[in-house]
Length: 577
Ligand code: ADP
Ligand code: MG
Image 1 (spheres, protein in one colour):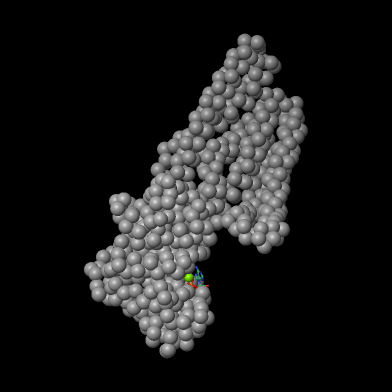
Image 2: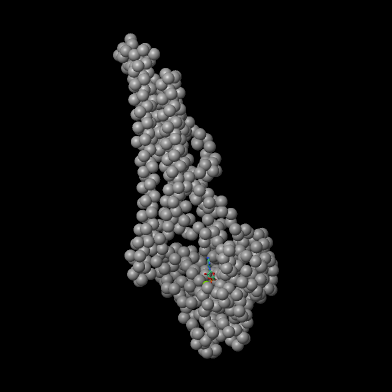
């Protein structure tokens, strides 16, 4: 936790010192109060001070209270301000970090834990910062100051303060040790609960369709139940703190009365001395109870900061090179590529070899899970390969400047979605400087012109979250138009015409061929029909290539390809083409 605080509070060092400094002032004023009360008793009441003296001391007390109030407010103000700045800086860094994480890291963390880390965990540490500044110095100061004052008043009774101090310190230590693991587990369970909630909201239709409401409710309840159990353990610890501290302090007070009385009788102490000792003991017990809250907040903040640090310290695994190559005839080459999504797992792709010339159309076909999308993920360097090399334009993609690599590859992913905004904002997402005529060109090629023209607001028609106000086919065509906006060297359509009818699919392929002549196109499809005119079809099975060639060759030489054709009752003639 202190690592995180050190890093993010460093720029505000002046405030971090000033805030608690005001708190120190307040604590000092507070420690003076029992001394004045002692004077009122010893000099005002029992001595010859009289009414005037009491009034005068009373005014001093009032002044101390007012100054104390002002110093406290100043400290609160500084603490809040710095905590807000802390959060702003941390948020900025976290967002930046998350944007540089590789997909492998996303697989590792899952979106819901990133969500909790970004919101809940940051909030908890922010509260920690504010508490740190407001309370951390005050309580020890009162504890130590009170003890020192007691020694000044009566060294013999001071021993009681030392014993009380040590006992309370022990209790605090044990309680904070015990609560840390519970806090960690609660945070983990909160992640799970968020995850389930999210799945439920996103999959609401599916859950109803399968009548799984009860099952989902139980799943959620289980997680929430464990959170409840852990939280009640925690509550027991913090509930124990208050009475324990009060008992110890009260025993201390009884001891002061007991020994104090005999010392007063022998004349070695005054009544005022005993009263100020008791005041100090009360101050200490009150200050320590507040520290109890601090312990809870800190143990939470420490669990949260571990989780925040974990994200901040994740080194981006995909490191950009700096080469920006010239255009080459051979645009893509996979050279003995092996890849697995997780270390120690079996390979998702094995021994992949193929090469592609500029302007060619490449088909990728194979059953689901055969590795088609994986090839595309590797080409875009969303993941780094385990063995072999991938060459684009004559240069290993690891040496590429990442942004120039991705600028040249336009991918329409299998599950592409649109962003909330307008059609225009979605197209500009791919190329922020594009002119309107470029947008219409891309829309025309993507067969999406009618989608736009039929809308009243044309390019400014609203797109809802994920594009859910469009049909599957309309969404696919808009996504294709978005990818074309990059004017990419390589265009990849990952099963992105699956929701289109045969005619539109055919028109789309022809339009791409005519309008983007120099663009190399990868088409992933389940339909041999869509791939018939590809220059090369790559047939995948269980992560390996089992056939490369033109349609006509593959039908006779590749068993897997022939089976796919047969399964779709493909007659070998395509009346549309
Ligand atoms: P296809 O696109 O041909 O249907 P994929 O390339 O998506 O197949 O998947 C190939 C294999 O890799 C499958 O066995 C799949 O389970 C696995 N896989 C895909 N994505 C991931 C991922 N993010 N993490 C782990 N395994 C994955
Ligand atoms: Mg796929």
